[in-house]
Structures are given as structure tokens and as C-alpha cells.
Length: 393
Image (cartoon, rainbow, N blue to C red; front, side, top):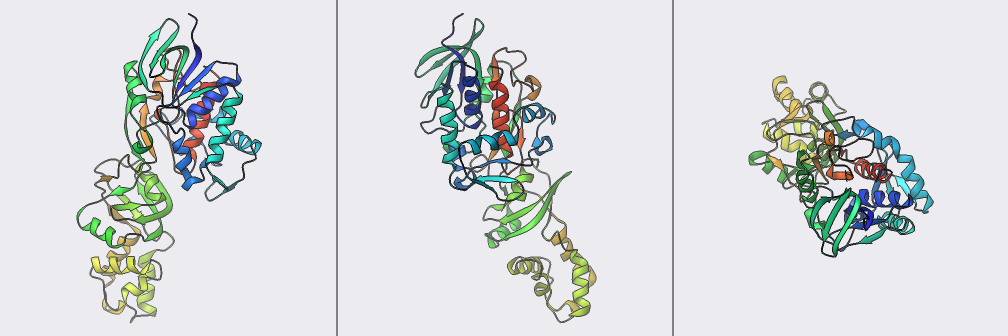
């Protein structure tokens, strides 16, 4: 069958653009479509408008998936250094902020313009405001019925992302397409998202809203040591966002608000050397004053250290170094940076991203059950999975 296009890619975000570029470079006739008028909005808003476009430490262990080995092939095919080379080719100045995170010096729009330039040079036909009405398998390919008419292709790529940040166009299209073709989907949930609380703990968070500390946050075997932020809904900040991708409903997390200090030893030493020092003043030497006072108030640990028992000091120390809390939920997809879960990797080739039982059908980027840590890892997955599919379509 003679198709209108060799490749149709649905979703003109990071992964879709990369796949289109690579397919176009191979001489494929590519139609890249998106339902939004403004494409690549997730790139534009990322990193505070400067796009944290990759992370120099991107390795398989930085990704969450039912199959932790799945991402290895794509990450090896298209590496962090490969994308950095592309950024340098376009003369985009960038810097490492912290923990290997790379940001544009100027604007995320530079990354979008770079990808659009590459796509144009590769002969890609790109159209926004194109709604997909139906997809069906046809002889040796697929028919895509759209608001711009029907087109057929030999290879169809789904790069429609997850459910995070619906205000910029996120939908469940990719998951529904996978189910239509009888592919299993791992239940999606919000990831890299603030955690919420209720009752007394929520009231404490509200009174401390805006206050941040360097903390370690643990859930089962996962530990993240980064900033923690109190908000009027609960807890946020990098360490909380990181743990949220692993946390399961109803479970506890453990927070160390002063990871560099063994607080019980610190307080006992202060009790000996400065017995008249009030507990909250002692604690404020290692924590912000408002937080120190809040902890002392909660555990009725006020007054000079000399008047407080070692048992009371131990209770306060645990509240700092070993704070067990149970979130009631998350802020959901509205503020989530990514979606955990997605198209089951068991259904796909790790080398090409092609569905094993649907020849010519590919899934790339966030729609797949591969979720990176905070800090540019998810963009690297988009570049790498898009590249891998682009070599195969």
C-alpha cells in the first residue's frame, strides 16, 4: 500500500520533535502533529523558563519503571553528550546549576527553536491545532483520521506525554491508544509533585509556609537529600518532589530536617555547656527559628535545657532527625512535573520503542512507563527514546 507518509508522529513535544528530526534525516516523509496551537509548552515552562534540558549524571538508576533495565538501550544510543553537542552546534550558552542539572543561560525558547530548525532542515511537516479523531490499522500501516483530513502511514509514533499539567494540553490520549491496540498500561499517577496533609500537620505546615531547609527524605529504600519547603498545602521542594514518585498512598515517609547534626548529642552537649539556654534557642542554631519553636511547642519542650529531661530531649531530637509523617495525598496532575506509569515496557522493544504485537506502532517519551528523577532526567529520556524510535520508523 502506498501511504501518504512514511511516519506520522502524534505529539510535538520533546520526544516527538526528536523522533521527527531523526526520521527526517533518514529521508522518511514525516508528518508531526499536535492538538495544541502552541507546541512544546512543557519545554518552554521548564526550569523556570530556562529549560533544564538534561543532566550530566543521567544513568539507568535515575529512572523509575516496572522494568528498571528498559531505559538502558535508548540512553546508550543517544547520550547526554550527544544532546549537549546538538546544543553547542546551535550556539546555545548553558550552565550547570547543581547536581549535574544543565540550563540555558538565556531562555528555554532557544531549545524549542533549535528543535524546530532541525525539524525544518530534515523536511518534517509540522502542524499544530490538529485533532486526532480515530486511528485504525490498515494494510502494512495505520490510518489516522484528523481534523485536517485522513492520512495513512507505515509507522505511527505516539508521543503525547502523560497527564501532568493539563492546562498546557496534557490528556490520556496515549494511554487510550495503547489500550485500543490491546497493550497493557501501568496505572498512571502524579509524580514529582508536592505532598499534602490534613489536620494538625496541615496547620503546622501553613504556619511554616515559605520556610525551607536542606533535608533528607526517605521512603522504603529511596532516599533524597535536597531542599524541603513548607507550603500552605503541605510539603514541597526537591526532596519531596523526588520521593513523591516512589511514595504509595497511605504509607509513611521519614524526614530528617537536620541531616548534618545528631540532634540528641547536640542538645545534651548544650544542656551541659549552656544549661540556661532555652531549648528553642538551642535548636534554632541548626534549624530556622520558626521551625525550631514549632517543634518545641508541639512536644512541650520549652524552657531552659537544665529543666528538661533527657527523655524529653530525645523526643525532640527524633522530631528533627527521624520525623515520621503520613501524607494524605498529592497536589495531583495540576502541579505534577511528570506522570509515573504508562505504557507497559513489556509491550515494547527497548531498542526501537516499537510495540511487539503491533508492527509499526511506537510509543516514546513520558507516555511510556519510564520516569526520571527531578533535574533534567525526563528530558534526556525524551531525547533518547525519540532518537531510538527515529532510527527505526
